Image (cartoon, rainbow, N blue to C red):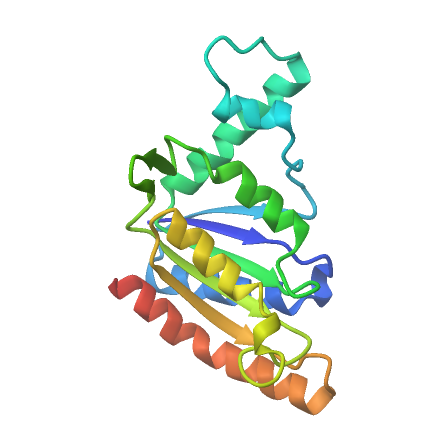
Amino acid sequence: MNILHLDSSILADASTSRLLSSAIVGELLQQRPNAQVVHRDLVADPVAHLTGAIAAGFRAPAGAPVADPATLGEHARSAQLADEFLASEVIVIGAPMYNFSVASQLKAWIDRVAQPGRTFRYTADGPVGLSGGRRVIVASTRGGMYSDGAAAGMDFQESYLKAFFGFLGIGDVQFVRAERLTKGPELRELSIGAANAAVRDAVARALKS
């Protein structure tokens, strides 16, 4: 089994999403000791945000001019990121909510792996995902409560990730969630404990599918 492990929190060792994503990968390795893991820390080793010149590496029209060496290097990185994604069977993502959505570092990675002809394709009836058969487990962390209640309509984090991976053809997206992390030590401890307790079940479901 090949596992792709992504982290996107800016909080380093203080990050709950990193703690949970590491626990998920640890449980996967407990169940599949021979699995291979590729870990990308999207903060320590950031992926450059998409530009027209970078996007031309996988969206260029025929006859497009040859790019400069630095841009060609970014084209090679786009190919590498897609290769890692397509080689994986399980993708584990540490994804904190920042301003109601995902971290910009994770969005940069998303923009680089959404490649027409590789991870999805255009058809006369609309786009079709080419990345089915993979499973995604997201370690989702939020300071407030967004899975229910008055703020639920402001969740553009989990809903976005589910929609994006669905666009690529991946319907198996699970969330191991810790919320209310800024609402006092007692609620924080309870939420992290519940999330850690959910890791084993999430991994078991991913390995069954």
